[in-house]
Image (tube, rainbow over all chains, first blue to last red; front, side, top):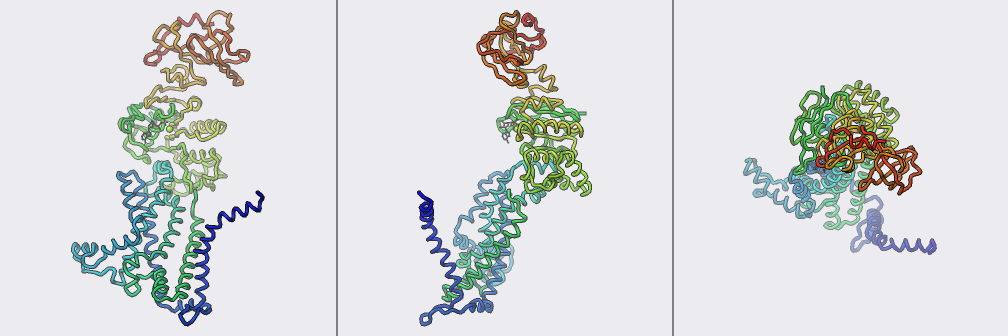
Length: 292
Length: 345
Ligand SMILES: Nc1ncnc2c1ncn2[C@@H]1O[C@H](COP(=O)(O)OP(=O)(O)O)[C@@H](O)[C@H]1O
Ligand SMILES: [Mg+2]
């Protein structure tokens, strides 16, 4: 075979995957970007070029700003908490502990469950009057009754707790793998040098977990902008948009108000946020990260 | 004063007794080698001294203190691991001063000590590097530096040279020995390599299946092995331990080192008759394998290039080079050597 036919063969081999990727990933992404510069087509009025009009409208959309704020709080509430919890659980489960195989499974269970199921479980916890939370706070502690999901001031926190519970087990698996790659002799060397368990963790384990933390962090950031299942099941963004996140708002705009151009513009903003977050993380953390 | 003492130390994991009643004493400033084949409990013994494992029975003393129930950090020891156990994310300097920082020594003191240790080990140029940027020998030095900077009276090493090539191993052997003598540290050094033990040690504790087989100076181990096992473990090639009832009577084994045997032509008088099986040429000398009746013996001799397999010859050795062991217990038997005297050339 000459070089030319080798090239042809190569391209033919990647063609099916390339076609699928282009048709279902690249084309929609580019189309979304284009749509965001047009008006939404109506029955009697085709789409026309409006330039940045959709983006200008966005800056004056109070719901957009509220939803963006919610999303930032949501990210702030879920990311550090789920990462810290994952690290804690992994360290705990990695130790010489009786029944640790069972613990690992227990911690990992929320990850296996579909988000819809998780949301349903927690929906019961939060239910007013006879939910688990109410049973504890009202019946046991004698506190006044509170509608956790029905109050704007507490609904977002409730969703944050659900998400942390769901994500920590997943991240724990990565930390567990990283912890098991650390030679036990390091702990012994540190112990002989007089380091307490905490000093050893802070000065040795934590830095050695940095590559994992970076990976987990990127995933956590993406997830905090990507998860909508639990909102759909538990609150539908309410009350009064207090629990609506960016992606859920896009879903609302696109499939309830059928404003596809505005939804496209919102999608582009979401993508921009995610891309810049990822770039910043790699740029800043890469330097402070030790790869073995 | 003894710097280290083990009294009846036992370490059992379930039914396996990795260390089974080990006792020995080492006086301060001595270089003690724990020697033995793989799996005989050397590392476990060392880890019991370090406090990385808890004894099942017995006591461990460091200095005059019973440290059996103390954590590693309280035992005034430093340790070099077989894998070096360097912290991969820390620079050489940070690795070395890790313990001083943990123990909150003032920065000035840390710097003086670091400078001293770096100069001692020739690490000055490497202080800013990460362990992954160092060769095996350099990593070894850093591990050594981390142990020395603590200035503890006792230093423990677990096969520290096993990851180095032969050339470097010899260099480091000399260097470690020199440092130990210069600094007056009590060293407990684990190895399975008898050459390492013989060249470095003041005192060798030979272990077998978790028990002490012999405890003495390298000279004692070489010249008066306490058991057949010790006799066969020390020396290259090891001592010939054979059963020749004609020479020793029944129930006794005869031991003689290959380098103590002289070869004479077949016609010469005295000695035992043998046949050459194989000659291994080593340069300065050769290892000649001979068959004597049903037994095999190796001889270390020079200028024997003319010997070829099948050559008949006579082997002889001086009376004082003859060792006797009880065939049943394998223990050394002291006896004069009348039966052999007639064979001495
Ligand atoms: N943590 C452990 N659990 C069970 N058995 C062990 C453990 N560590 C060592 N052993 C056993 O103890 C014996 C001695 O081991 P070790 O001290 O490492 O030998 P050496 O260092 O002389 O090669 C071996 O048979 C080994 O399998
Ligand atoms: Mg070992």
